[in-house]
Length: 500
Image (tube, rainbow, N blue to C red; front, side, top):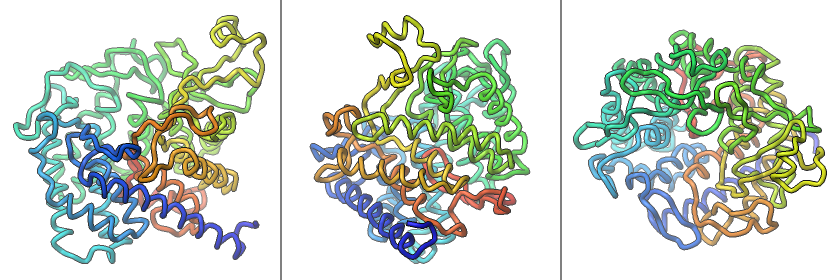
């Protein structure tokens, strides 16, 4: 099938319809068995309110439902959202600032932008539009309570009724440094700068990290920061859990407003350069594969968790924005490695963690009981669960946008087919226990909210060939700037500055 042919166009449209049907299947299961609750369990058809009972699955699904023009789902979610009481929290009195900001707040801001932009026709009812705006502002005020600390580094647990925080002494760098997009967007929507200033004050400590002993390489830092002073408190870091979206948002803040956040780009480039120079690792027998180990000071540990795979797309995006082919190529090598990891498993899906050796050390051979170490076993999947993670699909989307190589689209489609084959249940999609078992092993009875927010969205986006689609990631090397930027949970936000 030649790209650009009528047959190819029809195929892409048919694939998008299948993705939309998967969304409908997941949405129906959730809506029918626990609308407004948090995590859906699609095997037992039960719900958990593990995010305060604020309906994270519904709100995370909203931007995707809008982009898929699923009017029934959009209306259901908005009807729920405009009546949400932020003082009512299931199972306690506090919510997590980072989780609610990136999931709920990001999803609501994205819906506002989409419904006041390319999808304005979907919700003509003024009461729903006004209700959405009111809830966005109220949530922004609630979340702002988290910044009432001596340094401006937020604590992560916020009592919404009392506007107080817990007594935690530290936060992760992701928890403190992944708020700038959402709070800046609220400032630009409302005209009140106080929201952006909260996030900028917290970010400032990470833009100029101290003490130096916790900065093992220029731009790369530990994972935790002290709330009282803004100082780093460890030297253990990675591009994965606890740190990932901090690095992600340095670049994306610049895309959001290149004039206001120009220093953030320089800080991201510093981290990117150090990663290429000092962190990037190539397993034994595979110089073409690139993996990102975690670090403890200047010691590298050859382990990479599932969230780290977003980095491929982040490097590609940075290269597209800055016109730097080296960055694009580096990100593509990570995306290609993700493809190889998927092809290693019986299901065609990636696991939660991989480990590897660069030198076939005796300790590696002993750990995995290998008589011989070679290119076929120098990488091992040690976390065999697949939890409907989106990061690999996200990186393949960026790789396709940068290269137009159809293999990334085909890899995404094969992953989607694998999900349909081993994760689908009667009323949704479930995490699985073993990517190395042909049937996926045991279904773990959990459908992460990111499945509808990101997995299906990125699979759908990669099957749109129209370069003029307003929500596509654009390549400035081809003369097109980005009018939207995706937050860390896959919610597109309208940029405020000149498109870059």
